[in-house]
Length: 346
Ligand code: ADE
Ligand code: ZN
Image (cartoon, rainbow, N blue to C red; front, side):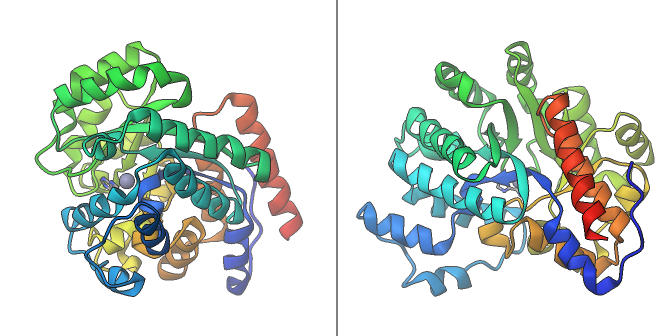
């Protein structure tokens, strides 16, 4: 592990922006900027219940997860054709590459689209083609993770999996998102067991608004490899020990937590506590178009508010590669690039 030299506080934002990193918790539908929502609505002949981009942006004032999800699913309704999914993913990938994201694992919510009559082929082919093209254009590496909506039934998740299987070479794993409270991980035990048999990587949102017990069941019932959010683990000392010992990554999203009122102030965020307890925490943007910032904004604002150090920055970037689903030699390659950038920064 690289020992980071002390750094003047005014140079920290530049380091945060410059360091190579992976983003592992980004919902592609949450990268849909109001400008693109309006452009796609026009292209597809749809009308929106907002006068203009600014009026839509003003509606982005959330009191909790559900108040956000309602507007997020409505925004996604402008996505109709394969090219729409392509354009959305391309915009995110170019933006991520500009933040020195070398690798990203992107969530998508197929049921949001299939419920409106959009085929799974349209969704996955559009997203996948954008990933392939962005690799050629910018060098960014990207893969897709299909998320089941937990407010729907396990039967519906099974039906989605069935429809997606002909496209299985275009996504690497499955996740679980949407309304957490009242929808514990064990509701999806059988479908996750099936996905595990099929060889998919497994992740789940847990401990965002839900209790620490949901993190336990994501680990022990669903057998996930990473926990998305997970910030409520601090309520359970035994769970903290388990996460640290097994190096279970947490994909933490500070600006999301602020906007959805998981923490009332960014200064109260527990990212430092998680890192200091030896957890493999990472920083991510979740739904950047809705929460006021992409990954580097999450780093810069959180470090400014909480006083985290350059050593924490390095640990977070290194964790992001460690926690990714790329092979061991690609991980080492990215981590070497990180070390080189830090070496030349000082
Ligand atoms: N879908 C998009 N963003 C989400 C979040 N933060 N939690 C749960 N589901 C989501
Ligand atoms: Zn999320």
